[in-house]
Image (cartoon, rainbow, N blue to C red; front, side, top):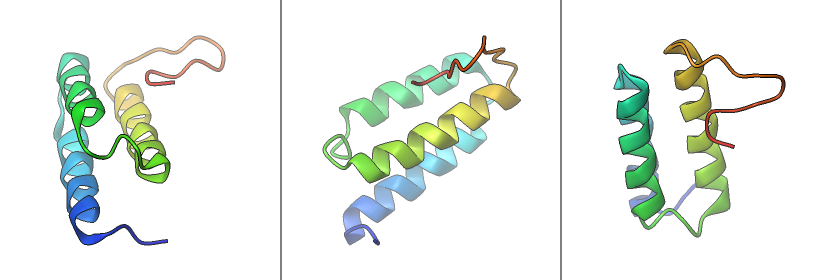
Length: 72
């Protein structure tokens, strides 16, 4: 299901920011921005961004313990 136009723009923007982050601290800042955004009520968008953030965190060196995620 596609997002309404404005939410689609926000999702695309946050995905780009997450993928450009070079440190775990930068990911934390972007995560905070996402949690403060108007995407909060949209569970599908939040899950999509959470997945991208967890992948980026792993690429940046986050070493999860068994079944642990950077952004649960």
